[in-house]
Length: 363
Ligand code: NAP
Ligand code: ZN
Image (cartoon, rainbow, N blue to C red):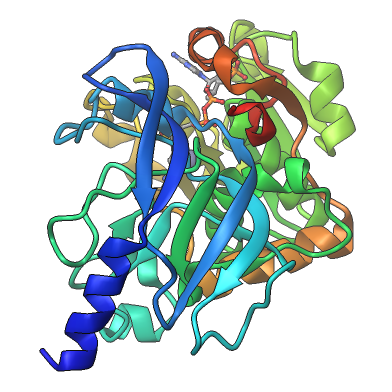
């Protein structure tokens, strides 16, 4: 280690930035105020004043340690929108005052084939999650966007187009990119019949994005309650799984299904709706195993696939696409002291369609 690196680290420790946050101190506990430290921007870092942070169902899974390996105290939040406060001396892509976002990753090895292909989410060494993870040093915990500042390597910061309001843009950083990426990969577009299962944060973004890509979109929800909303988002058709006759009519209808369901649901019902060679992509991440019958896949050469978030290049592409098509999330703004209530409501699917925390309420 060179002297300048040692001095740099010393400076970082001395000038850590006091940051207000909300955290779960233990598994499943209610979130409460906590003061954390952010590093002063290093040469390639951007310090961001967080303005808004979306509330993803992944936040609830992780606070409850449903995926295992949770680290506490945990400051959730990976749908971050804010303004650049300051930059390190080698930062070239951003300047103070810029409108920016940070999603689910804050670092990766930056040199493997996946990173070089712009697919940092599939980094072959280690991708660093925005929270509930350790930095590449293997010891500093990462903390997410339920906080007033964050320091991030510029490679993992994206620009929010001027056309998009920051509050409606925040959910694009996870819900947007997680659905945009598989829609692009499996070529949703004109002539393609795309179904979206589950009309929550991810699902409502998938409907808007697939429609803007020119696909013929069907929204699949459990009840008829969200029909009018789904049509306004661009769904040409709507199907309630509570009605067996509409499930029957949907057999072998879709080229692509984006499945956003957050708990274990019957995969065979949805697989039966795929045409020959159709693909169902799981983006929903329940912790329980999902039963799949061989005969849901074999007769029509169907595929069941998975996809996680998207790379940084693709995240910027998605934001620019949303800017051009004027696509933001449908949101309910909350103050941070309502976060525990919001989690309860999210578990009951009682949100239209994303809670977004106004970080100004973090006093
Ligand atoms: P959300 O807002 O709670 O939406 C999930 C939707 O799934 C609900 O609105 C509901 O839609 C449907 N649903 C819930 N339980 C169901 C059940 N038992 N049967 C059928 N449908 C059910 O959650 P979200 O924030 O969109 O996240 C969805 C999932 O994606 C979570 O598991 C999350 O962790 C995961 N996720 C994955 C990635 C990734 O990289 N792959 C990224 C972000 C999030 P209806 O009310 O319309 O039926
Ligand atoms: Zn998320």
